[in-house]
Image (cartoon, helix red, strand yellow):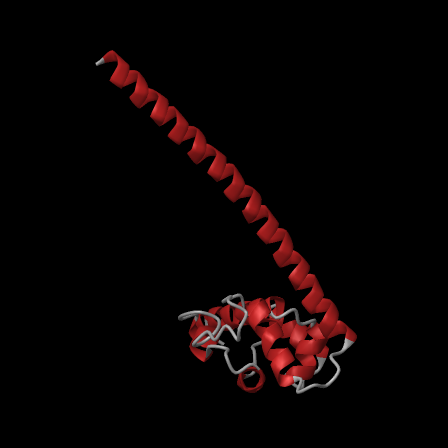
Amino acid sequence: MSNNQELADQQIAARLLEIRKAFGLSQKKLAQIVEANQSNVSAALSGKRGVPKVWIYKLISRYTKLNEKWIWAGEGEMLNDINTLGTGSSDPMLIMDAQALKESNGRQLSKDEMERMLARMAFRIEELEEWKREMEDWKKEVIMYLLEDVQRKKGLERGA
């Protein structure tokens, strides 16, 4: 195998690992999706072997928003034509949660699916609370600046 091919395989493996993490997939679940032995998935993710094309096609058929060009060449974003599925977000994890709910067609979600969704929601809530605190701090700074500016202008008017 050429050095260029090895590098390409490592980059594809890195993107596959990124997909696994972004979608909250365990190595075992990824192996199930691509219909492969978990040790082969582990070897591919660690760069010890190439990623078979059929795995990518199985992932794309399961997660239709995955961008094939991004997987193969790193071009563009992880997801094609991001459809927020009503989440108002382009976050792949939240979109995939929404897609899983949409595709469940009323079936009971597994405990693992629910726990992953709840964990991601808790994380998002923490992020939003942090953003809210930052916005409140920023608001205070703006108010202080405006008050100082008004006082400075009043001082200039008195001195004129």
